Image (cartoon, rainbow, N blue to C red; front, side):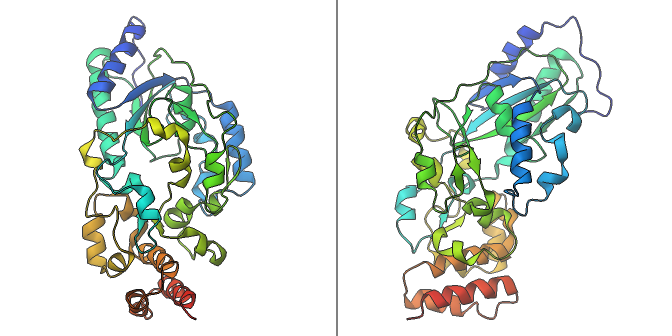
Length: 359
């Protein structure tokens, strides 16, 4: 949003503008667009309880941001409405997730990370949407986000009617399941808000039962410290030893709760070709990925979400996968080749992995 955003035009037909914004959203490649106000009282209470219980693990920034995450106008002064968007990403060209998970010699990477990094793509589309709005409304205050700032994205999306927050704490859409990205445009325009989505989880607890580490400790309650996505992406230190065998071959993120969700039977491949699989990472052998030099990692992950964890954590994660893999000469040789790695973090996980293959 501009430093001093111009006040909204009181004579503008905001109902008509809201309808036009939804049409533009479709034209820009979003499968859905909704609008909501900024009141998130219940979600703020849930967030504060989650933080007080320490379930955010090492993500200290969650506490530092305070209520800016749950009060949009504190983050971007003047915000009165949030435009929330959804973009499907399921890579239809990828090897079946179940096939990869069932082969412990292969590396499983969360399906959202197989293609281009969604952050820049969605923000660019949101900026394009803002320019179109400006063509009708004149200069206005706005700021675009997608998992890039202290924003309660799923809570806002639920209020905007894009779906409901399931028991696994991911957003679910009745027609599209949960394989989608979301983004937001904070604005000072008094647009017409949509109705919140209803919850349709019912008595189902498939996601809870499917979680490999028991991270979904109760319906709608996730302990990030146990979550494989947190352990392999957010955590920068050693992965707790007791959790390593449960990670299996998941080396970047985890999709098990979504794969188990019956609502995902309604989902289909995304239409955005930038999210198609790159570099064969949908079903690569652990041994092959572990042999990458840092330059290989940089080349093969540049422009993808995987790049953000860095080479050291990449090797840490794959070492755990190799520790859980069948004992073969190739696996042992790959691990032994990294025993003298400069990183203490990598060496420690390599030694653990080798111990798993000791008879």
